[in-house]
Structures are given as structure tokens and as C-alpha cells.
Image (cartoon, rainbow, N blue to C red):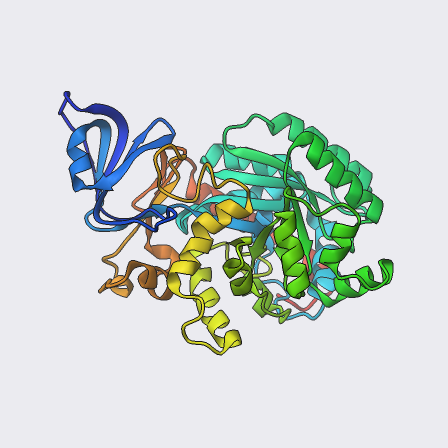
Length: 456
């Protein structure tokens, strides 16, 4: 176990928390590594990163000796629907699942309570898996914000906008108004960035997408959207736009700009990739969810190599089933080798970069998070290197991608505050959150059984 001890060298510079004796992966532009490294935190910022000599230069309120474990930036989940944890494992193999099963189920069950309960559970899962920042798209997103605030995570939270009636809006205009109220409420929160989340091009009208684009510019907030994800989307948009792809359609209506974070981007060609790069959008690559749904594999390696802002996402817990980015790393590396017929494709360092600085760039937050550098926000995690699956560790990037799993995350620090220590949650009651979620599953089971669906 890594310990917390007090230091007594009053001649040293002041700090709040010093992590010592760690294998520090900075994930900065040069990918600097300190095998016996130190990270120094004051307030919510990193004030020093370097070798072991740094530890003697600071007087800290707390010092954590991590005993050779990996210290790295917190992982960033660039796309999910966190509250759907309470629906996890339902109808996993149902064809056309979104329209045949998920939308009808949500129409029956989505409520403020459901959103809060599911978000609490998902937040705990993400913290225990090393995720310190995530981008979410759902309903009653102000309820998600309350859970994020309490647990101490960082998040970009998008209020859904969709053309048909949903739990918190009768139509897209009501969804936009809900989003505007949410944006005004959380505009100045230190860890929460409110956003618009038009569900997809094909589930919104051209006028709605244009309105959201204009408002996002005025309010200076992100736009989270599913884009180039499905054959149905491609067909609807082609019919609407005289044959354009979803990416080209979004450009043609003036709705593709640097505020956009596009989830999936599977059905894209070279022209679409160049258009996305020129528009400076962010891309969320959701490998597990996409291959589970047999939708295809996004050309993420090409996007990364061409300099697009691309990070990793899990999608919702009904899609990829977990909210763990660290468990995505393995699949991202291996599947891209397979589809490119190249064992050397997608090396581990690129995958880890996507999970950290890539995610930060996708969310246009690279000046604040994604790497361990002086002046950046202190969002970092400690990975156990002594677990059997992590021994030996010759190459830390390979160990993270091919060996590690979410259970190897020991400590999580967000905004300079320790929110998990030795896998114990410090800011919320994990047992109570789990119990409330399990109690809610009885409502879900009852609803599903009454509907006659044989998917339990």
C-alpha cells in the first residue's frame, strides 16, 4: 500500500501534495518519462514534475510514496451516457437495438431519479477505472452535474436535443431551452462544462442543428453529437441532402465547427476526415461499443496520424457495457492491427496518448488536462505495478495497453484532491450507491417483464 506521511523540512517551498517514487508518464509533447519520478501539487495545479530530487525541495501537507507504481494523467472518456448503467446487459444482441429497444425503454423509465442513480453508479465505476474526466450526453443532465460535483470528477455534460418527445422535453426546441437553462446554471463551475447534445443529424432537423450551432457559438460551449455512426443515419442524411455524407451535410448547413465533439465517425472517407480536420472538431473513438454492435471500425489510426483531435470513449453502458477506458486500450490496439493487417500498427504509446492528451484535445481542453506539466490541473492516477498481471513491467506503455485492467487503478486525484485512495472512494459512499442501483433494477425488471420482452 502507498502511504501518506508528513514532511518536516520547513525550509522547502510549500506544496499541498507530493507524489514520490513513481514511474511518471508525463504524456507531454516529448513523452518525457521519469522512472523514479515526483509530481508536486499546490491547490488544484501541478507546480513541478521531475526526478526524485524534487521530493526534497518541497514542504507538503501530504506526501504519497507510491513505491514504483505508475503515475500518469487521469484517463478521459470522451463519449458516454453514464446514467444508462441501470440498463446494463439488457437486450445485448437485439438487432437495431437503439430504435427497437433502447428508445422505448427510455420512454418508460427515464426520470430524474433514474438519471441520478445511474450517474452515481457510473461515476464510481469510472473513478475506480482511472477516468477523471468524461463527456456525457443524456437527459436531465443537471442531475448528472450534481453527482459529478459531489464525487469531485471533471466532466463535459451535454443536455440532449432530439426531435421526438423524451422525458425532459416534448420536442427539440424544449430540449434547447432546457440546455440553455443548464448552461446558464453551470457556466462558471470549476469542473463542469455544460454543453448542447443534439442526438444525431438524422434525429434532428436541419433547422435544429443550425440553431444549436449558432447558440454554441454565442454561449461558447461544446456540441456533443453522434456522427457518421450508422447505415440508417447515412441513408436518411443522403436522402435529405441530395447524396451527402453526414460529415459533408453538417458542413453544408454550417453546423461543423470547433465546438463539435463527434462520437463514432465510423462511416467516413478521406474527404470526410480532411473536412473534420479543417473544421477542427473533436472525435470520440468508441471501439468496444462499435465492434459489439457490428457497426464497423472507425479509421481512428488514420485520423490520429493526420492530426485530428481524437480521444477514446466507451459509449453508454448499454453499448460497450463498461465505462472503463483502461479496458478499451487493449481492444483499440489489437483491432486496429487486425483491420490494417499490420502487427506494428497502433503501438501502445499512441493508444495511451489517445486516452490522455488525445481526449483532452478532442474536448478542446488540452491547455488544462491530459498531461502532467507545470501549470496544468492536477488530474492524475496511480496504477499498481505489483499486481500479478503487471509483473514484470519492462515497458510501461505496453503494460498499460496489453496487461492492465481497471482493477489496477489504486489512487485517483482530480483538481488536486484525492478522491480514491487504495481503491477506497473518499467522497461518496460506494456501498450506498450500489445498493440504490440494485434496488432500482427491480423497477427495471418489472417494466421489462410487463412489456413482454424476453431479454433478461
